[in-house]
Amino acid sequence: MAILDILVTPHPILKTKSKEVEKIDDKIIKQIKDMFETLESLNGVGLAANQVGITNRIFVMNVTADENTKGYPPVAMINPVITWESEEISDITEGCFSVPEQYAGVERPDIVKVKFLDMDGKEREEEYQGLASHCVQHELDHLDGILFVDHLSPLKRNMILKKLKKMQKERML
Ligand code: NI
Image 1 (cartoon, rainbow, N blue to C red):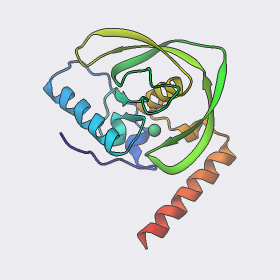
Image 2 (image 1 turned 90 degrees about the vertical axis):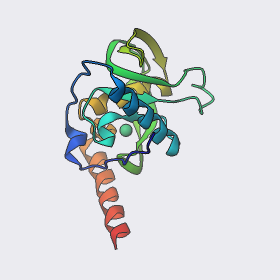
Image 3 (image 1 turned 60 degrees about the vertical axis):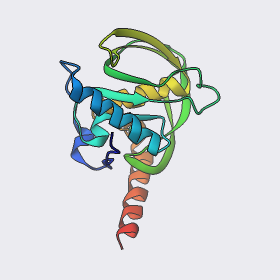
Image 4 (image 1 turned 90 degrees about the horizontal axis):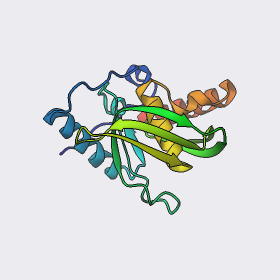
């Protein structure tokens, strides 16, 4: 297994709509294992394939560290599709390894149902709430080239991106 490098905005791959996985072969299994290892090394809750430079529709998620979501087992989703979302919205603070050290409240449906293939190629449908639901939606957004900051007002988004740019510049000096 290997720990993969994370792409940071404004990398163009983060804006790319990823392609469906047609066959779950050894290469895909290795990709998923590497993504889980990378996520663990970062103490993260979710990681999408294009964040490590691979433009296929896969993300991994592990929300077991949070008291409220520890009941959801770690999962790799292949070709995920949201099949239902609640009218109720929740506002939860989100961050992203591709927008490092920046955080903001994002409004999303509080509950979603998502259909996907698991690592065994089995079709599953699961329901997620709260932080877990936000994580699923955040990672699924990545597969469509959308970052959490794209859900914010232009003013807020520009503020965050400017702060990030300044941070990146300072660290290069
Ligand atoms: Ni993210």
